[in-house]
Length: 358
Image (cartoon, rainbow, N blue to C red; front, side, top):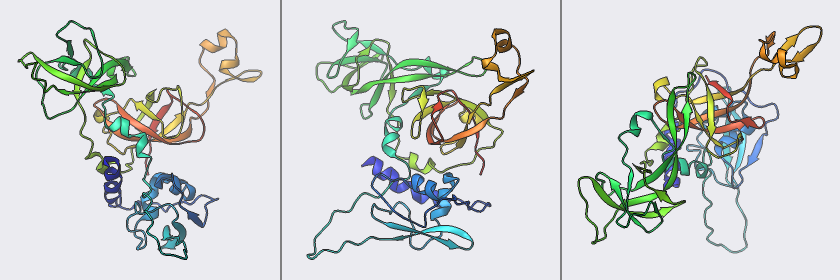
C-alpha cells in the first residue's frame, strides 16, 4: 500500500517541473504507437521515444488526454502527436467487447520506475556517517548472557528508546573511502527489526531498554548498531529528475545488489552527497574510462605492453565514453545511493560519474 501511495503522489510533483529550453529529440527508430504492457514503467516507455528518457515529464505534460501519466494502464494505446512543435503522447483506452456485461478488476497503473527495486533501500538505512558512529546505541546483551540473538528473543539496547517506533538492527560493513583515502561513511548491513518490549518480566533503566527482535535475516550480536527505521512516506516528492553540472565528477564506490558488474535498475553507492549539493533526483552520467595508448613504432594499448611500458605514463589517453545514467534516490552527508536507470552494456561497480546537465 505504501509503495502504491509513493507512486501516485510522485507524478503530481514531477509534472510541476519548469519546461526545459531544448527541444525534445526523438529516437530515429521511435514507434508511432505503443500498447502499454504489464511490467512497463514510464521511464521505459519514454526510452522507446526519446534519446534522453530523463526528459520524460515533457513527453507527457500539457496533454489533455494524459493529465496524469501515472493513470496509464496495461492495454492503453499511446499515440505520438506534435503540440507546438514538440512531441507528446496521447492515450486511447483499449476496449474489449463482450457478449455479456461483466465487472472487470482494473489493472494497477504503471509506475515511473520499478518501486519494488527501491523499497528495501527506502525502508532501511544502508550508510552511516563517521560522525554518527560514536553516539549510535548498541546491542548490549540479554539476561542469560547470550552473545547472539534470534527472532523472538528479548535483548537489551543501550540507552532509552521510543516505544512507538520500529528500530533496525545493523552491522558495520565496508568503509567507503574518498579520493584521499578519507572515510566518507560505512556500509550498514541490515540484521532485523526490533521494538521496545511489552513483556511484564523486563524493565527499562536509564542505561538499558529491553527490545523484542521481531524479525531478522540473520542472527543479531552484541555490539550491533540500533537505528530508527526511516520514515519514507514523504520521499516521493524528491524523485524529480534534477540536472547536475558536468563539473561535478565522482565515482561509483560499490554495488549494493552484490555483483561487481551492474546493470539496469541495480543500486549503487556514489562518492557525492549533501556536501556536494546533491539532492534526491540528481542525475549523473556513467563514464567508462578511455584506454591508455602507447605510440612508438607500433600503436598498442598500454595494458598490452611489457612490464616497463605498464608503469610509465601513456602517450595518449582516449576520451571517456558515457555508458549509462544514474538517478540519486537517497542522500547522506558525503555519499548517496542511486539507481542505474540505463546502461549500454555491463558496467563496472567502480566506474566514474559526472553530472548530467539538461
